[in-house]
Image (tube, rainbow, N blue to C red; front, side, top):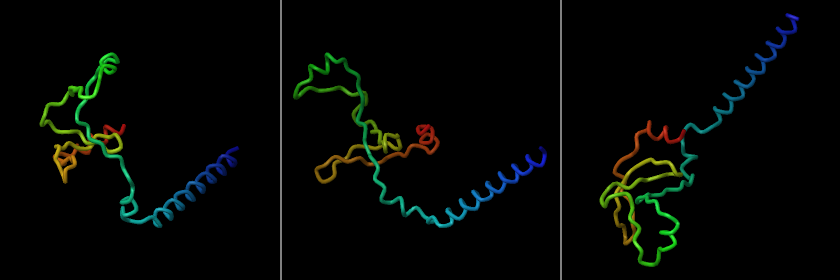
Length: 116
């Protein structure tokens, strides 16, 4: 029985060694820089404000209705990437289009907390 257990342990050790070797060979073939990520497309959104309303109020909306939001005028806008809060900014106009100037990046610790 002891010999059988020893053989099993040796087999597991050899398998683990093979996995470590294969993993290190694969990582050696991967590029050392992040250039392969530069073409990845992400969804960027900016939150101007939020509000809650009843269905009755929602059904009464018409063209020209004004919805009051929670943020004050001039308050920083929240910037999200793939629905994760990553920065704050201010509204600007660029070539007759709205834009956002990034004024503050959320700390790395806060970004990590929002992931989990």
